[in-house]
Image (tube, rainbow, N blue to C red; front, side, top):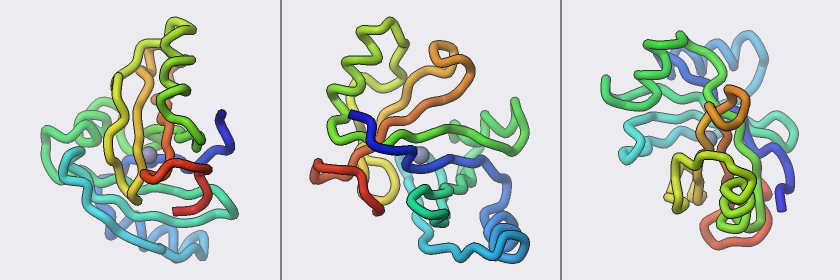
Amino acid sequence: MIKKIDHLGIAVRSLDEAVALYERALGLKCEKREEVPSQKVRTAFFSVGEVHIELLEPTDPESPIAKFIEKNGEGIHHVAFGTDDIRAQLAQAAGAGVRLINQEPFEGAAEKLVAFLHPKSTRGVLTEFCMPKGGGCCCGH
Ligand code: ZN
């Protein structure tokens, strides 16, 4: 079952500049940075109540984030729903005719299992499901 919006992913060209902007302009504090080599991205996390902001900077021109920025410019890249059963969530979406980018969840940032639905199937929004690696409810990191 989906429990909450876990985070919004925002594609940026420069993590340092974007982190500084969020800290100066919004008064938020960057809680953690992490590189995810499998996705060729560097990430920085902020908390806004229960929801997180995940800034994503490409580390390689072949990174999906680099391609996104090339096509759309910087901006909101994905919406992530926290779920307590990511495989059931994927099965439900597939059963409803949604195209899955990932048939199987993989390890994303913040020690979570993640999987994406294709934006062409979800009204233009790249949609992520995420769940802590150990299973259970998706609360915090
Ligand atoms: Zn995400």
